[in-house]
Length: 108
Image 1: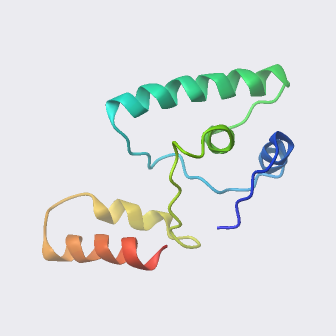
Image 2 (image 1 turned 120 degrees about the vertical axis):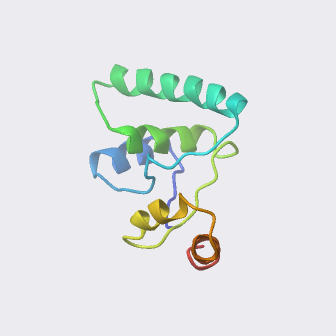
């Protein structure tokens, strides 16, 4: 929420200000999309390095989102709710299913 990347400068401002919008540990996509995303990440990393900047995955993913918002769907989890994602993996039980549904419905 609140992510507005209208210029490349706004992307670099997010990087330098350490603004967190994307957690890198939770990415889902088809094999084809992963290959496409890999190429995009590679191009963004080279662009950042040419500016003598080194940033973590979050900054690079922000730049990827800036260049290809059609490829990336951001899901808002809620403030400090990232750990809830670990509860989604595991046994297929009613409890796990209901937790997944709660994340999908409440954290939009």
